Amino acid sequence: MKFSSKQFLGVLFIAASVLTLPQAIRQIQPIPVIMDFPCEGDQDVHQEGMDASTRIAYCLSLWPFNMGGGGIYALGTSSENEAAVTGLHFRREGETLYVNSRQVHTGGLYETVRWTATRNPWVILTNRFEVRNEGLISFDSIAAPDVLFISGDVQQGWVPNPLGLILLFAGMLLLLRGFKISERPDF
Image (cartoon, rainbow, N blue to C red):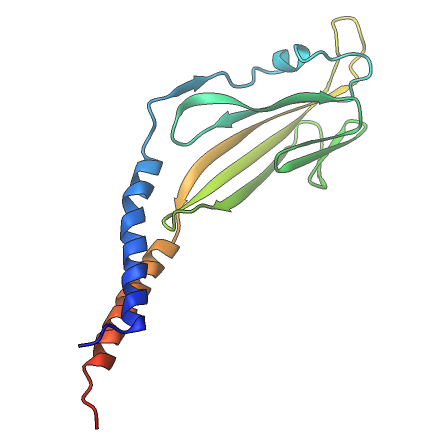
């Protein structure tokens, strides 16, 4: 009996699928790490050195799926009417905020989900963004409100990726087809 290229490829697919499954299970298990420093209203941006030239101030909290508590995803100010953080672009027109070119009025919410492939065929990383236009705040206690304050949350998590099952079944199919071809009698 000869070991065909289809059988070899099938064994590789099965091995890749089976060997990465325990890693995927470990990835989605909670990590015993507590992060507990999320954004606290506009207090954090006031500590960022806002002045009379500040046009936009933002603080986005990070809530990792597999950790307890939260942290800060992005914190900063801009003296321009635009600012950018990983995955988001902010633009200001008066009291109106544009997030990735979508209009968000004062008190409004922008939501989106970003999917990121990982090396593990069993899981996909997701980032769920919730960005709120909090309206105008002042840079100090005596100035008139003229800084657009943006708050929000980024919730990270894992979702199952069907690629792991596809690799496993494709490997089994290739392995079985390789046996059928190699067991046929020659005429």
